[in-house]
Length: 428
Image (tube, rainbow, N blue to C red):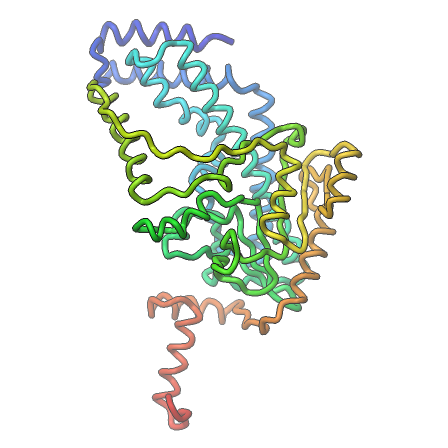
C-alpha cells in the first residue's frame, strides 16, 4: 500500500532529468525506462484502489460468463459474439482495463495539471466506477445468456440475427431511427424478442428530430426488455415514453446490498433541449478541452438553459418506476444475493416477481424460463423456417455472394428461378 507514491516520485525525478518540458517525446532506452516506471505506477495504483479479493471475484465472474457463452454457442449454433467495447476490454483482462482508466489522470499529474491528492481522488473514482459498472454488465449479461441457454435446451431456435453472431452491443444500432432487438428466438409456440440495455438514443439532425429523440436520451432503461412476438423495432409514437410496451421487464442486481443504495433520476424529469442548445453545450466542452491543451483562457460561453432537478430514489423504488413508465405484464427481479425477508415481501406485494439468492446457479432461473415460454405461446406470429446444417451453410454462402441478408437472398434466388422456369406464376 502506498508504493504508487514512491514510484510517482521516481517518475517525477526521471522526467525532470530527461524531459523537464513534459513533451513525452522520448526515445530508445529513455523511453523504455519511462514505460517501465509508468506501467509499475498504474499497476500499484490499481492495487491500492482495488482489493485483490475484488479482482479475484471479477475474474471468477468473468469465467462463469465465458463458460455460459461457450455453452450457448453450442446450444443455439452461434458463430460468435459482439460485446460492447468496455465490457469486451474488461472481460479480456479486468486489471489491464482498470489501468486504462487512469491514463489521462496520470499524464495530467506528471504535467503538473493535477496535484497528488486531486489525482488520487479523481483516478480512484474512475477505477471504482469502471469496476462497478463492468461487474454489473457481467452479471446482467450472464443472466441473459443463461435464460437463452435454458430456452435453447428446451428446443428454442435462433431466428435473429440471421447470420448467427449474437451482438450484445448497442453502439450505433439506433442511427436509422429505430431500436432493433439483440436476439429473437422461436420457442415452440411462438417468438420471444430480447432487448438488452434499451431504449437508447436515436439519430437526429435538427431541433424537430431532437425533440423526438430526447425521450430516448432520458427514458428509464431497464436491463432486459422482452416481447412475445417477432419485434424488430420498439419505437412507437403512440406511447409516452415512445417505447412499445414490453411484456416482461427483467432487472438484474449483482450487489449484496443493492437495495440500500440510491440513484439520481434526472433523466425523465429533464427539460428537452433544442439542437442549438445541444450544440452549444458540446462546443462549450470542446472549448474547455482546447483551452487546457493550448494553455489559453477559456472564452465566456452563455449559460445553458436551466433544467428541472431530478429526484433521488432508492433502488427498490426504481422497480416501481419501471412498472409505472412501461406497464409490463411482468416485472421480474433477479438478485444475485439473498434479500431481507421484509423487502422481498414488499416487492412481491407490489406485483414484482422476485428471484433472489440466484448467484451463478442457472437452475434457479428455471421459473423465469417458464414465464418466458408462457408468454411466447401467446405470440400470434407464424412459425419461422429454421435454417440448420448444410441448408444453413448454403444459404449463408448465397447471402455472401449476392451481398444480401439471408432471407432476402433466398427470396431473390427463388424469384429468379421462377422467372427462368416454365411455370412462373402470373405477375412474377
